[in-house]
Image (cartoon, rainbow, N blue to C red; front, side, top):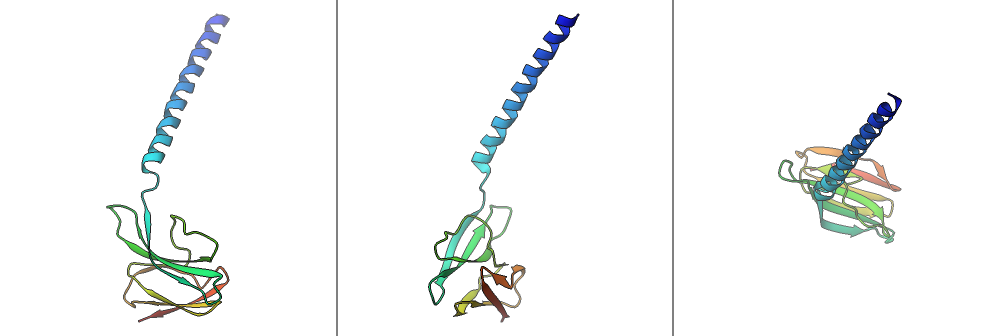
Length: 132
């Protein structure tokens, strides 16, 4: 009886291990094939007056079921733009930027646009928003 129980536990453990391996393989395959559905396309890059920061305006597209959106990321000049959302401003419409000085940037956007993110300070830079 004891040997039978041990045999059942071993078989059960093997089955659970195989199912776990199949699930993990499926997860990593799907993540590899479909994990990065979004893409960024830089539309404008503007360097700060001292050259130590960069403001990127980029269009982000996450596939057929979502629309395009426009993002602003302010980064140190030695950093590269990654395939993520902007870290400063996100809107439905394209906008413009102007560095006022090395620590201040102005974002000019259409007043009627829908905005999703409007941070006031990013990476040591103050952001001023002007809806026109």
